[in-house]
Structures are given as C-alpha cells and as structure tokens.
Amino acid sequence: MPLQLLSQRLEKIQHDGLYRSLRSVERTTPQVFVEGRQALLFCSNNYLGLAEHPSLAQAAADAALQYGTSSAASRLVSGNQPLHAMLEAKLSAWKGTETALLFNSGYAANTGIIAALAGRGDIIFSDRLNHASIIDGALLSGARLIRYPHNDTQALARLLEQHQADGLRLIVTDGVFSMDGDIAPLQGIADLAEQHRALLMVDDAHAGGVLGHQGRGTVDYCGVTGRVAIQMGTFGKALGSFGAYVACSRLVRDYLINRSRSLIFSTSLPPAVLAASAAAVELVQAEEGQQLRQQLADNSNLLRSLLQQAGYKVPDGCTPIVPVMVGEAEITTRFSTRLLEEGIFVQGIRPPTVPNGTSRLRCTVMASHSPDQIQQAAAAITRIGRELGVL
Ligand SMILES: *Cc1c(COP(=O)(O)O)cnc(C)c1O
Image 1 (tube, rainbow, N blue to C red):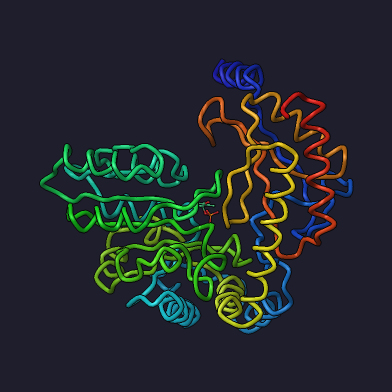
Image 2 (cartoon, rainbow, N blue to C red):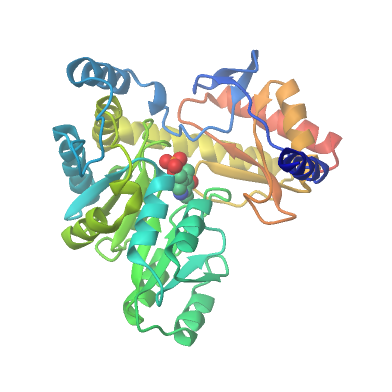
C-alpha cells in the first residue's frame, strides 16, 4: 500500500511533464559522452575548466597519498586537520575578510548557516528566485520567511519597513542567480541592510572565480567590499572542486562553529578535496585565472549575441549562465532531447527549480569551449527552436 502511493505520486509527476531521471555523463570537458553518445557539453558549471586542470588533480592526488582519503570525523571531534586551516587562511586572504569557515557543500552551508543564525522571533527576507538550499535553510530555522520580488530593492525597502522584529533580521540573496544568470543589486541591498540594521548574506556559488578582481565574486564586482557580513561560496562550480565556505568575521565564524548543525554533525571534507580547492583558490588569483576569465567572458558574449541574432530574447549580461526561455515544461524536455540527438547537451530546467511557466534551457559556457563549438550550439538551438515553434 505505501509503495502504491509513491507510484501514484510518481505517475502524477510524469503526467505533469516534470519527471526527472539521471543521465550518465562522462567527464566535464566540452566534448563528453552522454549515455554513451558523443555530445558538446553546454550545461556544466565548470566555468573555468578547472575540474580537469592538472594542478588541481595533482594536488588532490598528492594529498590523498600523504594524508589518506578521509578526515574520519567532524571538525569538532578529530576531523579538524591542518589542511582545513590552510584552506581557510587562503580563502580569507582572497576574499579580504577576517576569517573563513568551510562547509561540506553549498547545500550544507546554506541550511547550516541560515538555520544557525535565525530562529523563532527572527525574520528572513529572501529574494523570490534564491536557490532552493536558501529556502530550505529558512524553513529549517523556524524564523518567519518573507520572499521579496526578484532584485526589487524598493519592494524590499517596503517589506523591511513593514516587518519589524525584536530579534534578528536577515536579508539573503544569490549574488548571481543560478537559473537566470543576472546579478543582485548589492549596492542597494547593502544600503537597506545598513539603514534597517539587518544582517546581509550573499550566496556567491556562481560568481566565485568568475566575477570581480581576481575572481573574488559579486561583493567585489558590485563594489560593496566590507559591507556584506556573510559571503557564502562554493568550490563545486568555477573552482572545479567540491565543498563550500563562508567568508566572514571571527564572531560569525565562532558562532557558526557553536551552532551550525551541518558543520557539527557531519564528517569534514577529506584531504584530496581540500588540496584541490586550495590549488583552485591560488589559480583564480594568478595570471592564468585572469586569462580564463577573459576567455569565459568572450565565450559568454559570443553565445548571447548569436542567440539574440537568431531572435531569442536572451538578456544581456556578463555571467556564463545564458537562459533560453521556453515556458512549458514538456516542450522544454522535448527541446533538450532533440538537442542531444543533434549532439548538444543542455538540460531543460523545470518547476520546482524555476517558477511555473518559466521552464527553460539553461545554457552555460566554459572558458574551454572553442568559438566553433559555441557556433554549433547556437545553430542547433536556433534550428530546433524553429522546429518546435519556440522561436
Ligand atoms: C549550486 C548552488 C548551491 C549548492 O552548492 P553545492 O555545493 O552544489 O551543494 C547553493 N547555492 C547556489 C546559488 C547554487 O547555485
């Protein structure tokens, strides 16, 4: 009986065109094998190509051979190793903050940080298009959650005016929005946070390594250095590794070590991952990182302009996330399937990841794409868009 219920629920998901399944994808390079067939990869977050960079792989291999494969405990028990401190020191130097604190993933960071900072009697103001892990953290916290219209500082100002609290007020926003590729108006939001005495948290999962001087992220890019109390970032995207961090003050770090459940009750990151992340943080600050960012910006511009010329309403921008709006979930799935048949791999993104009626192809470019590969992708997206009546 209980399993039958699950099967009925799954059928409903299928009926709504929202069924998900796993595809086997070999590698993170522009040329990949998807379910055994060759395709060009246009939906990875390996923006700078670091996931297959020899210096990261070498650092990981060396660390595994020297220190073993696991930390074998939470940081608060016996899993706090010198490599954790070494990486945190590199992070705070890069970000220009007092300290940094590692988390096991972006998901674990957002749920762990938000639920530790806020609780009953507190209010969280969250952009409507924030990542699911932020929402989950807010729900877990027990604080009141107020979602403000996307990137709308006037609406946020009104809501801050309306909703006073005796406790803490936390404003949280993605730096770069993961499914749209646009950037939060951090100047305006930082002004509001200061005026209304709210704590400000930015999730920079898609900007670390990509935007700002030496790839420091949206806080640097938007000119609000020193005004964002909690900068969360991840290693699994442009930094080509795995895990996450918060760059913050000593006070916030100390508080999180004492209160954050995803930090306290979870085995810490293993040596190989820490060493690869450290190599990535060094690389994005070096000349090579600058060259890769330039290549990435050129590639992003090329894909945007080719799709715009073809008639797509792709927003201008400078991030590697290029959404092609479709609308209906089912057509989006068909679009993605047809593209793969033509050798272009782009996943369709559907509810609940994005709001109803805004299903899309989320195309992402990498520094490692050649102009020719980008032209091939744009041509296929144009041809199949016409075939499906999307264009
Ligand atoms: C990917 C992502 C996360 C989750 O990070 P993981 O390290 O993959 O768990 C959190 N926030 C945003 C905005 C993301 O895009």
